Every structure is written in C-alpha cells, then in structure tokens.
Length: 72
Image (cartoon, rainbow, N blue to C red; front, side, top):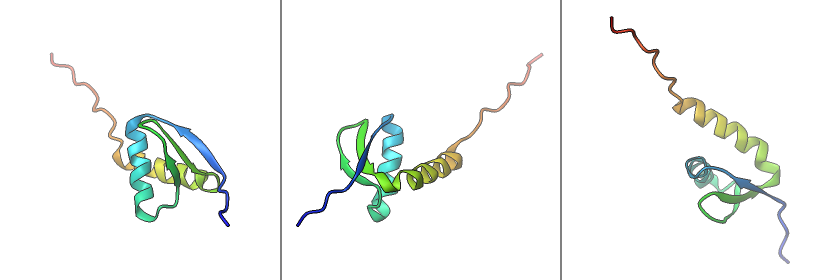
C-alpha cells in the first residue's frame, strides 16, 4: 500500500533551485517532485537540513566585492 509523504512547496530563483537539485542528487533525500523551473516539493521533515546545506553551499560560493580604490 502506498504511503503519503508530507511535502512543502518551495518557490525560488532557478539558480537556487539548481543548487537544491544538485544537493538532492547525492542521496535523493530532499525532493519529492520537481514541478517547474522555480518550484519543487520537498520532504517536510528535511526542510531544516536542506536550509542548512543550502546556506553552507552559498557561503562557499559567496565572494564579496572588492572595495573600490580611488584612482587619483
């Protein structure tokens, strides 16, 4: 008999969605259904872990802009 899985609708930018899809591709732990380029349904019990992993990934790739140097 099929079991229901509680899910949460996530709406985000396509770039963020691609990171989520990449994170899910390792173990298929997060995504229940990929709806379109900006929406997907993730497992309700994995939302907090997904947020943590997404924050870690964004911190790895974040590069603050260099301060502008005056050219006198």
